[in-house]
Image (tube, rainbow, N blue to C red; front, side):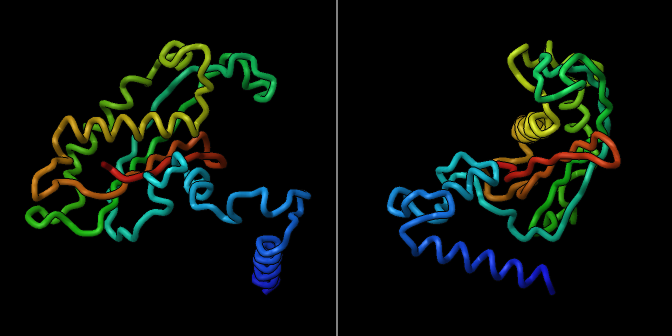
Length: 197
């Protein structure tokens, strides 16, 4: 009950600030383009702010997930923001890739062929497994878990296109949403998700 009351107060305050000529930060409301621009919401959800990326996952009741793992080495180039992890260290990630769709394939009654999905995930992960990510991505890139989720996601989408599991014909063999989760441990993980096309 306290949580709901708190949320109501926050929403009321935000609405008040949107209609007022000031903000909690002392910036005049007319100095801001809009109170809640969709471009900001898109950026917060990982989009480019132009609205090209959906701002939320559509309802997709069917999911097939593939689990694998990779062992990597990397550093954060002695950046002080990362504390002791700034230097070279190793990590073992458990990797979950979820394929979600609105409907099952009309002929095969699946989200995606589990064998083909397993093979694609393994192929993408091969480029990182037992490697130093500093060598793979270069010294200027902070290979955080969040960054790696996006790298794996991009690799899966590329493999789908290569295998023509997403095609331009009338019937797509996979149409939906992909979510990549990298588990650093049982206490910490990160994800990236988006449309498969």
